[in-house]
Amino acid sequence: MESERKERRIQFVCGTCASTLVTRDAWAEWDVAEQEWVLGAAYDYTFCHACERETRLVEVELTS
Ligand SMILES: [Zn+2]
Image (cartoon, rainbow, N blue to C red):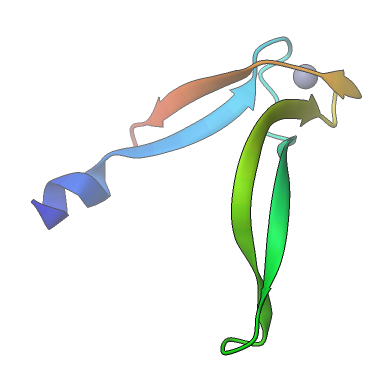
């Protein structure tokens, strides 16, 4: 159900410091029709900008 799917929202945080300043290695591909970069593929390498080092992401479910 669409309404149920919308209710479950998640956030990824750093497994070390719980910061939300985390990014993931990915490829962007140029979409000619949309005239913008679109996400092509996401890779396992994750980086925390608070720790300034590679990290492990933890999925947190948002309750609000
Ligand atoms: Zn961190």
